[in-house]
Amino acid sequence: MSLVQMKSLLQKAEAGNYGVGAFSVANMEMVMGAIRAAEESNSPLIIQIAQGRLPFSPLHIIGPMMVAAAEKAKVPVCVHFDHGGDIDIIKQALEIGFTSVMMDASHLPIDQNIEIVGKVKDLADRYSASVEAEVGQLGVDEEGNKTKGTFYSDPLEVKKLYDCTKVDAIALSIGNAHGLYKMEPKLNFDLLAQAKAMVDIPLVLHGGSGISPEDFRKCISLGIRKVNIATANFLSIEQAARNYSKQDKRDYFMLSSEMEKGMYQNVLEHIQIFQSEGKA
Ligand SMILES: [Zn+2]
Image (cartoon, rainbow, N blue to C red):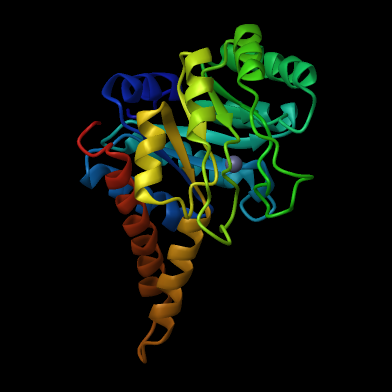
């Protein structure tokens, strides 16, 4: 069985100084493509789905599929619930067997963020699952809506949240954003280094689609261990479907196979950038 907790997976990455890709999935082809890429490159893997995506991919259907795929994988796979905003839904994910959950209360003042994350940590402990929290708010949320501005993470708040909750990983806002960047983002590496100096735990970078390989590597050298990739996966399988639709002779199963391949290629590319190849 290869379903693993996020904590152990990221601690290994910390010791080996590499990053682990956390790839958003929305259907079976994406789950299969991600796992095939990780198996072929002998890499650890995180597959995840955000609460905001559940209207398209209901949790009671996609969740058990993600867990089943992880259990049968030949490499360690963590199944993570991304951007949870609701403790009842987080509990449903834990019941299904997710080994990690994120409680995103980053839009609230830090004391309220800490209080809610603390409750989720108590809950997740009962399932031996890991917890990710976020400090600071990204300019664009997971569903593509503009937040009220980009609020850079305050390293003192990062420390406070960690000291009070002992979460397993913390996501930062250092100039990254969800969705596609209009221009190449300018990441605040000093801020990342300051936060890392405050808390000796794995840090998380959201909004990974469109960050350059050099910037990814720099982030990893400064303590980012989990890198979230969502938009690039969706673009990659959409493009694969678009290319396939240009062929004269088509059938659904070949289309499905091309979509799986689209995910596979994007995941493989990121595994190589994050240097988790051979680290399973
Ligand atoms: Zn995110």
